[in-house]
Length: 409
Image 1 (cartoon, rainbow, N blue to C red):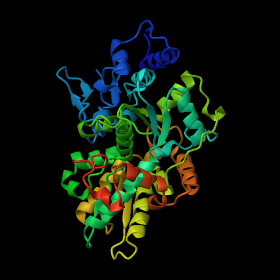
Image 2 (cartoon, one colour):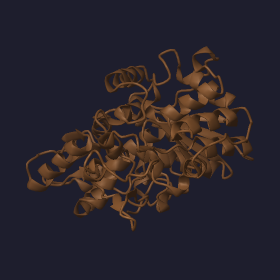
Image 3 (cartoon, rainbow, N blue to C red):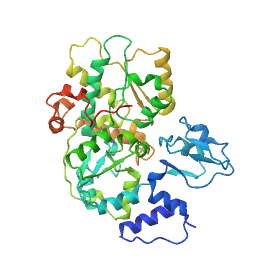
Image 4 (cartoon, rainbow, N blue to C red):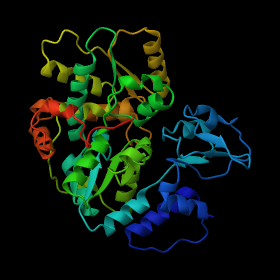
């Protein structure tokens, strides 16, 4: 009988060849996981755990208590509690746990779409598909797969940088006030909401750049299909959350995108370059630890150059470091007033489904940011264009209760 991964790769190869037949000898549970990922958590239990050689390491590693005992006395993953951080996969090491796959229903939807189809790529995409794959070549590759176009989510990171800077100016008025940045990492936000919920008043109600991008596309094209690609498994779970499930139809990891290119025999590095850069350096640096803090700090200085209380940031990456930082906040052992948390070491470039290593990913992101035409969101004319599309005439209107950017936790 085929393993889960063998079944996935064979079905993907058949799908890209327009072959809807099923292979012989497969596990029906594996097939259901691949065809209907919406029914499951971002992490899948592809083999039953009757005897545990790792002393229930998966359950012990989950800070969200998403791994539970079922009625039969076996461990299972609760989809409503799982964030997709993948700590359990790393802890188990037995191969019984694996990342969910959304490729098959996503590509089926792309091929059957009646309206436009947009690929939204995370800021960490630089260099993930080899150094020779420029953003323009990647755009051409997605068009070869049937996408109408590719949108860099970093543009919406620009817009949310403006919002975060305005929130800081409004809420951090005196020493002792502080802000927990809200617009990037779903694991960080889940940690605050589910474990340290008493700190939620310090979290501005902003959606992530992924959600803002998807909502903007659907506002302009109500019949559009939106697919996000990034290094993060937790984005799969974020896209399903009830209050923001209107934005992104499918989430794929970079590794899944590479699988699609391989199955379709598409080599992005050999394709035509179609450059179209819209984001500033600030938005592009969201992909690495410290990028959000730097972007918001520069934006506060640009918006309020004479402000007496400046941004004093502290960052943490990895769930353990984030919990330690929250401990310092609660114990009053930090003088920072802006806290950036990232669930993965290195930030998004250290995501579990990145293709490159952290340092290499950081280098590509830094180089791309350094070459950006615009330094900050205020200098970026495309930000002004998006705000105009939203009916906003001033930057300050971003603090309004706009359904595109605001989240009510």
